[in-house]
Length: 251
Image 1: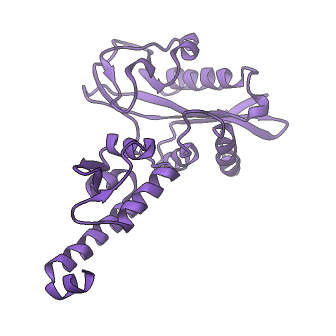
Image 2 (image 1 turned 90 degrees about the horizontal axis):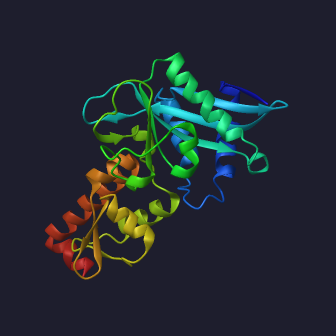
């Protein structure tokens, strides 16, 4: 097995392999391949390594910059990382992680790395939970850090904006709200986990009567195109309500 930096010929294979590798993962978002694509487009793939066997790309790991509210610099986020199912359990993911961390420490002078993942796995690489480091979208016990040099920062960590992706099921709910948009809100099943995730993200706001309203400014951070459609829909509906003739037709 060979571990090397990605090249342009690897992009399609990385995307396809990431989709397959996360297919049965219980916490998948169905956006992992999109995150990698967007990081690449933003020139934010600080480290992008592939594992290759007989000319076939079988694994991949990505590292990108993070920001920390206390101003600490040269910290990075690990992931997504993937290995094709038929090659899992052979230690390939671990070798990719070690190679990536080595490049961060010795190649670019990184001061630390963070990730979201199970502590019982990532502790073998030196990652642990630090209460003073927070990632608002993740349970604290799953947000882990590995300092390379100096003290551990204290503050809120934000991954690159490429990580703010909506899963397809989330996009479907957003589209439903856009289509059914009403000034007083859209009735939704608030016990639907997808709806609840959108509420947690601040994209939807819960209203009385089991209704929700959209917050386009928050949606803009995740999907500018859907945010634009939402704003257009809201503007058009506003015109209907302000125009007595159109309101009469609508009623």
